[in-house]
Length: 250
Length: 184
Image (tube, rainbow over all chains, first blue to last red; front, side):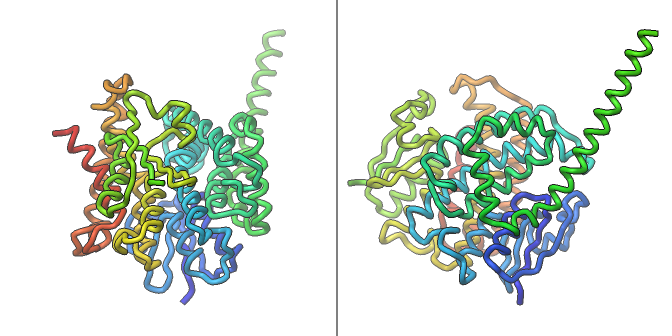
C-alpha cells in the first residue's frame, strides 16, 4: 500500500515533503487539498489529521502530521535515503533538530505571517492584518540576519556548514520561496542585504532539480498572476495621473 | 568534563532540560542565566548560544540550544535513560516529534505570550499589551482543547496514550505550569 501525502502546493511545508519524496524516489500518492477552498477543514480530513493542517501522511495504518516529524520519519523509514538528509551521527543530527526547532518561531512565523497579510490574504479572500504584517516583517528580517550570520557561518554551501543539503535546508528554503509572491521591490528589500542567504537558496534549489521547480510551479503561477495585476493597476494609476495633468493644463 | 546546562528557572524550556537531567541521574553543572537581569544578552553567553536564549548546553566541545533538540540529545547520548522518554521505535518517536513540533506554534506560543504580556511585562520593563494578551488567551484556550481532545484522546495517563511520560509530556507540562504560577 503506497504512502499517501496530503498536500496543498501553496503550503510551504507541504512542498518540502513532496520534494523530499521525489528527490529520494519514495513511491507515494499525492492527495491534493485546497486550503483556499477550506478542503482541509472537512470531517473526512479530520480523520486523517485532527489538527486539520497540511501536510499529513498515511503510511499503511500509520498517520502522521507536522512536516518536520514527517521528513524525519521518511528519512528513517525508507531505504535508500542518503545520510546527509538526516545524519545518523548524533551531533550532526542534534544541530539539525536545533535549526528545525528554531524555524517554527522565527523564519516560519515571520515569513508566513508577513506574506499572508500583505499578499495571500487578498488572493484567497481573507481579511489581512497590517499590524501583524508589520510585526512579522521585523521577525522575518531578524530571522534572515540570523540565518546569514549563524546558520550559514563558515564556508559550507548549506546550513550548518554542510556541503550537502539536509531536511533543514529543504524546510527553510521552501518557506523562503513563499516570498516570490510579494511585490518585487519588497522581496528585494527583505532579501537584498543577505548575500549568503540568496546563494544558499540557489544552492538548495539546484541540489533538488528538477523536482524543486516542478513542485513550485503552482506558486510561480500565482506570482505571475499577481505581477500582471500589479502592472495593470500601475498602468491604470499612471493613465489617470496623466489625465489629471492634461486636464490641469487645459 | 561535566555537562553544563545554562538555564533560568523562570524559563519553561530551561526547567524541562533541568528536570530531565535530574530524573535521569545525568551528572551536570547548572549555570544560572538571569533573563530579568539580561544576562542572556552578554557577549560571553553569545559564545555559548549565538541566539542568546536559554536553555543551552555544553557537553565537552559540543554546544547545543533549543530545548527539544537538547532533550533528544540527552536521551540519546546518556546511558541509562529509559526508552519511554524518547522511544527507539520509529512510529512512537515520530508521534513525539509531532507533539513537540505542534507545541512551538500552539501551546508554547499561547502561555509564553500571555504571561509575557500580562504578568512578566512590568518585571521585564516592557509595556503591557492587552490586545496581544487577548489573542494569546484565545490561542491558549484552543491549544488546551486540542491537548484534551487529540493528544490525550487515548486512555493512557500521558500524551499519545502513553503509560509513562516522554519528553513531550515534560516539555508541554513545563509550559502549562508557567500559567499556574502567574494566574494563582
